[in-house]
Length: 212
Figure 1 (cartoon, rainbow, N blue to C red):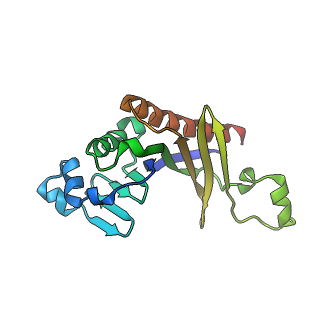
Figure 2: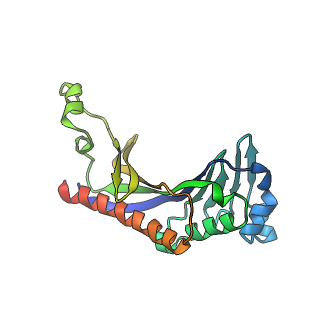
Figure 3: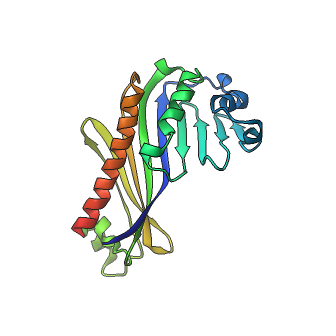
């Protein structure tokens, strides 16, 4: 399988707490954290439903901040590489603004969604084991993907290859890198882990390409 191009669709940092006090979270406070101008504030809608609060930053920033019952998610859809993304810095701003109780942090992780475009039509059999393929009884396979969770270097990884219906030369590679840690002391280390996770997903993509 030869890869024609790659596109970062989304980078994400997710942190998990024992609980999050939503009474501390307001649209005014979030917009203040990100130093939005009056004009930018008008382009940054704030949504609130039971158990969820979210701020979508102005379109040119391509970011959103989401608070769930016990999770904080920050998404970066700008397409920037990790070394050029402000994702970790944005996370630092929210954590230091005391919108969440950092002593209640129990885990965090990074998510990478990469759109892969291939030179030729994808042979989806490369994602599927022989036992599963035998179910087809030699009938045509329209598409297929795979998901596996595994441990590596004291981290839990969740890897997925996701087909796109109607696009036989494209699929999504998703990787989640999960850290079971109750405290973040070094945000420089966090940035290094963010970049390290992206290097891992690139290694996986290259290995898939080299083998097939």
